[in-house]
Image 1 (cartoon, rainbow, N blue to C red):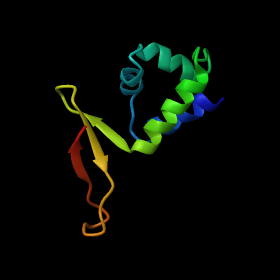
Image 2: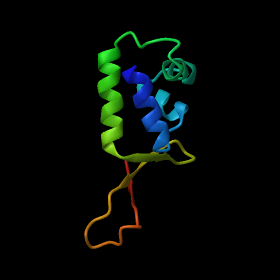
Image 3: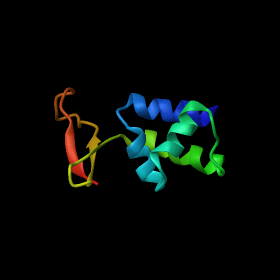
Image 4: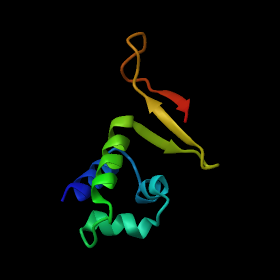
Length: 88
């Protein structure tokens, strides 16, 4: 299903199930049940759109204090291997 695929894509970009769950303010177990196909979210269209938004937004890291940090794409002035950290 679409939700399973999107969760897998987010994980492929470095998202943990816990980080995804934090975005929805739900438990890690709930996201794991979506990933496994055991359950579907009640508002699957809304969840699908939000997962797509997270994919389009870029990669995120969580600092130890819980603050989100977005890795922004490099500009043409920077080397392609560099990443710029920006607070969320």
